[in-house]
Amino acid sequence: MSELSDLINQRYGFQSSNDLATELPNSNATLQTTSSTINEILDRRSHRQYTDEPISEEILDTLLACAQSAPTKSNLQQYSIIVVSDSAQRQRLAEHCPKTPQLFQCPVFIVFCADMKRNQRIAEMKLHQHNNNNLDSFVNAVIDAAMAMQCFISAAESLGLGCAAISEIRDNIEKTSEILALPASVFPIAGLTLGKPASAGFINQRLAPNIVIHRDHYDDTTLEENIEAYDARRHSIFPIPDARQILVEKYGIAEHYTWSEQTARQLSIPERPNLYRYLTEKGFDLRSNNETRKN
Image (cartoon, rainbow, N blue to C red):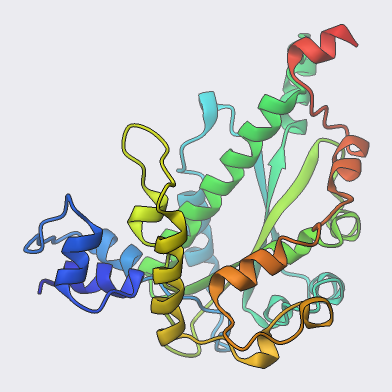
C-alpha cells in the first residue's frame, strides 16, 4: 500500500487498501505523490497542548503573510486578523472561554474577524455610497476570514507547528468584542491557538467520502447505513468515555455512545441564540438587497 493510501486510510479510519478502494470508487490504490503539502494535510492532527517554546516574530509575520495569500471574493479582502499578545488581555478572553485553557497557555493567540468596516470607510474616502451591507456581503466576509485562517493553519503545520480553531470565543461574543475593541461591522468568527505541539497529537477520523461527496446531484439515500458504519469505525479507534457524554441530565448515559449520538445531542439545544441580535446591533443588515430596498 502506498504512503498516500496509508494517509487516506488513517484519515477515514479504514483498515486496508481494500476498504479504500471500496469507499473511493474513483481512486487508484497504487497512486503515488511527491507533494509534501498533500501529505501534510492528510496527516494533520489536533493539537491543543503546546510547549513553552516561543514563536519568533519572523515566523509569525510569515504565517500572517500566508493568511493574506488566501483567495478573497472580488479581492475585497473583507477580514481582519488580531494577534493578542498582551497577557492581561489574553487572561480576560480566557475567562470567557473556560473550555479552552490553551487560549491563555499557547505561545500565540489570534482572532480572525469578518470585516465590512474597512470597505465602508474606503467608500467614504472615495465619496461613494456603500450599498452592500447585506446578507451576501456578510457571507463573503465570513468566507474570506475562514479561508485566511485555513491558509495560516496549513502554513503553520508545514513548519511542524500546531493549531486549534476556537469557536468558544463566540459563546460570549459581546465580551470578546469589548475586549478586542471591535467596532461596528466587525465580528470575530474564530480564535486560533498556535505553538510547538507538546505531543504527537491525534488524527480525527472524518466522515467517509460516500457521505460527504456527491456526484452531479445531492443523494443521501444511504445515509443511515453509512453513518452506522462510520460510527462503528470511529468508535473502534476513539470510543467516547461516559465522562465526555453531553447533556446527560436530559438524555442520560448511553450504553453505546457514538459520534452521531454526540452530534444529535449537541444540535438538540440551540447554540448562541443571541448571535442574530449581536450582529444586527453591530450594524450587519442580514437581509437581501431587495428586502432592504422594500423596507
